[in-house]
Image (tube, rainbow, N blue to C red; front, side):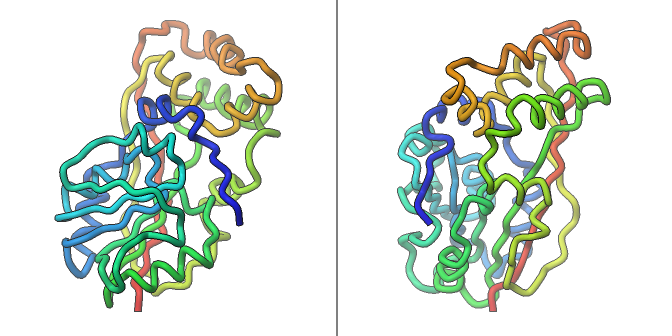
Length: 248
């Protein structure tokens, strides 16, 4: 499978407007891992997961094949960013206590990724894949967001997006399952902030490229009735789906 960079062209926006993951998730993963020496974050993007992992692990190696994403990655003294795809971590055999892929595994050649996981994970090491779908805000705003997602830019979603829509239920996951509690991201945004976040969607970039016209003003207009005061902040919730397994 060849690499298609869906996000490098708008990496600055991705780094600025993608939400961070809850500290409780990283604390849980560190507690379940066999050690806290090294984590590998594959498909790191601009480091949203890598910097969270660095609060729990002595070292984090974060890889991504997108030069644009890595150029905007969040600096942290315990995170080392490297170019690399899902099959080339650059790590030694049995080096990692934990391997993660945050909102990324649906893009992978998973046979290559799982082979690399088995090579680099120490005995009893963990592999954690997670994803999230549409935000939950309020019934009226949610309806606008769903219509934009499905009707305005729906035809521009890459085929791999279907795995997010099925909450990874259709992803093969050949590791011993480990139970995990539910996790979600909760944060606040004003209306322009929500639009900026939606602007990081791969389908929005593909729509702009195909049509030569930014679809985000369409979203702004549709949101006006459901969210009249643009400066009013709302609570945004993104539920995480987590696949967690132990490497034999």
